[in-house]
Length: 231
Ligand code: CA
Image (cartoon, rainbow, N blue to C red; front, side, top):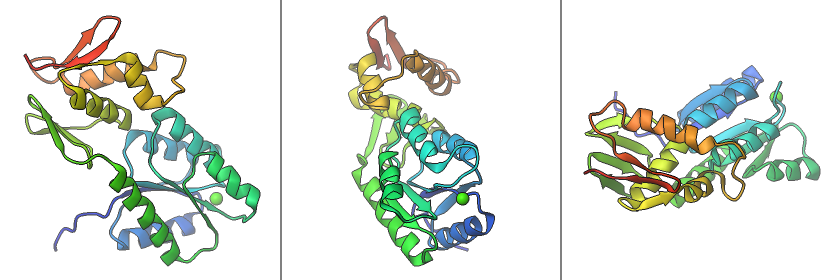
């Protein structure tokens, strides 16, 4: 059997089991890697832990509805991952609510699987095309800006989407300093959270990037920011 390079990594969040199975199978057949969640809570956890190329998100979900899931994805990780809403109702108000929550596209049930594939394809290509390309190296670290693969001494390091954004920023600027304000803007845009969330992201980053190795590359410039240095 030959291994085909996947077209992209998708997340499907849909509580109706039969619809979910049909959608996942169709998208897998179309060449995508597909992860699946049956409710908003599980979907949100997956969406913030991995970097998907597109999320197919049912609006009518138990516990946290799709609109809220989308809002939280945008707020928590600042994720730019495209979101395609699935909805049972086709009114202008529903459509506007979807876009208002941060959705990129909208499909009304029942829909043809070909249309779903076509729309997902557009979103994935647009998202991937907009990402910066190329591999950056700083000392023993290398990062592929498109596939978001980070390695240290050739060993892959897994990070959350936020961690990956921070590493990409630090590596792009290295050996220069990145201020805390720049980091917050990169993650949360103009609306950083009140809490000291950046500090906990940096803590996780250090644990993954520096702790397993002999020397630390992420340096703190007290009160100002952080820089990567290999000296
Ligand atoms: Ca539903």
